[in-house]
Length: 218
Image 1 (cartoon, one colour):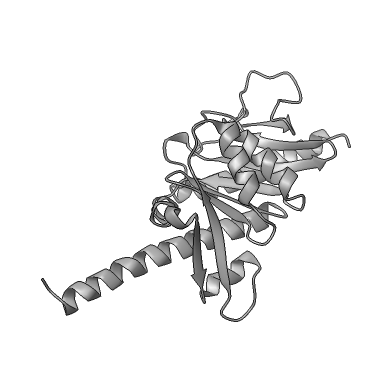
Image 2 (cartoon, rainbow, N blue to C red; image 1 turned 30 degrees about the vertical axis):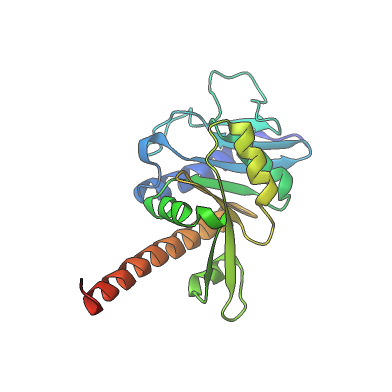
């Protein structure tokens, strides 16, 4: 399948929309994070954020198109995000994924550290679980957590081992979350749902500890 200029331009426009939405929420501190939208399956090609760009702004050089090995498909001076290989792993492991978003927040970092010992975080009975496409009553989800390996191929391999089509996300310890969906709208919904659940859980832990302290003062 040949990716047309119109398809590429449309993907870049949709990445702009997602990027600015997340930037307004301060989900890209210090130019961190990366976003991608799949353009074709065979061969695998996807549009991805360029490395080192200020994600609170728009420029003509914010994105490039790469192949399944994370290599630019045409000559460019741009470098793909350092973690582009992880996006490629998601698209290969979860063929129905059409977009993949990675952000760094305080809440996902706290949850990934709190529950790294279990290598997963579980939560049950929250309404926003429906935002992940899971509609059973009193549903429970479990999102895997992997170590934050500095060597990106090692990190990508660790992620490849634990992700499944059932839960559209993975946490990296003290690093951030990757969330995906069939398209950019669904990936955004999944990411927002995860972030709500993380923040809710950490705030609930804080309130519970405060209540215990008030009930049983030292």
